[in-house]
Amino acid sequence: MTAAAPSGDPFVHPALVYRDDREYTERTARFVSDGVAAGEPVAVAVPAPRLELLRGALGPLGAGVRWIDMTRAGRNPGRIIPSVLRAFADAHQDVRVRIVGEPVWHGRTAVEYPACVQHEALINKAFAGRHVTILCPYDGNALPPDVIADAHVTHPVVISAGRQSVSAAYDPDGALARFNRELRHPPGAATVRFDAELLPAAREFALAEARDRGMTAARLQDLNLVVAELTTNSVVHGGGSGTLRIWAESERIVCETQDTGRLSDPLAGRHPVRPDQIGGRGLFLVHFLSDLVRVHTDASGTTVRSYLGRV
Image (tube, rainbow, N blue to C red; front, top):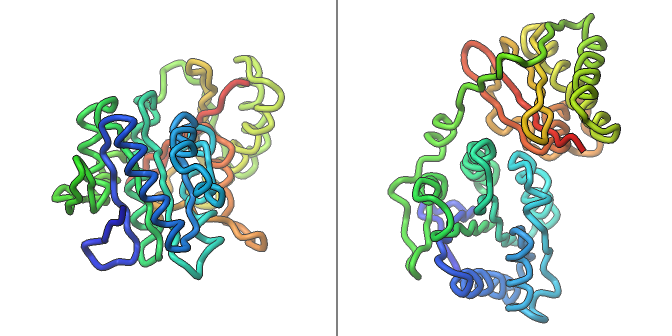
């Protein structure tokens, strides 16, 4: 199965709307086998049960495929572009690369979903001009109609019922704007103001609050790094000071910073980090460590919210 970009851009980003396991397996297995036959490096990043379906369908053809459980690697949608898609594509820059990526599945929560749509919209910016094809399957039976409608907004090409068509609804910038939603915190959130001199105190405040809410020692180390990066970003890029909030939400500890800066790069935190890079690692590290990251930015300031499991 092949797809073409209507704009002539070498990057191709089709959505596959499938109706059952048979259609899913047939179409994705054909996409993978066509890539293998063409000598293209192929990666498959889908939920674990789908991995088993495809492995079984491909048999020996799948021996050279990179298999990735998206429920683990892509638990935080903000981690997928740098740590899954770019990591694979950048390792094979001299040839066309083919990837199956399924970031939206039945069971994604309402809190996670805006980050999923933003991820799908940002793929188009991250890979513009690249010789890469990323096929994104969507379960047309299990997912709500508005999710399928958003797939048409974030993908220039849609494959449905065996037919490929250019999406008349394609508007990734519109999707980014629509899901750049204000993040409201609960009234009981523990809150502290910080500036450059108070950065160590802000970290200690966050650790104490998370410890009181049942976060384990291993995750407290992650939280310490996340808070350090977020508060430092506020001081350096967000006007010199900010507000840190922390609270518990189900099985997660949520921390956020709010400042007066504005994020001008929609891919901030999603650029791969070079080993020799000095600076520019803050939001990348936050995405890497967090189970979910939500961001809201406008002319009045920026809020970055990190969710981390207590254990």
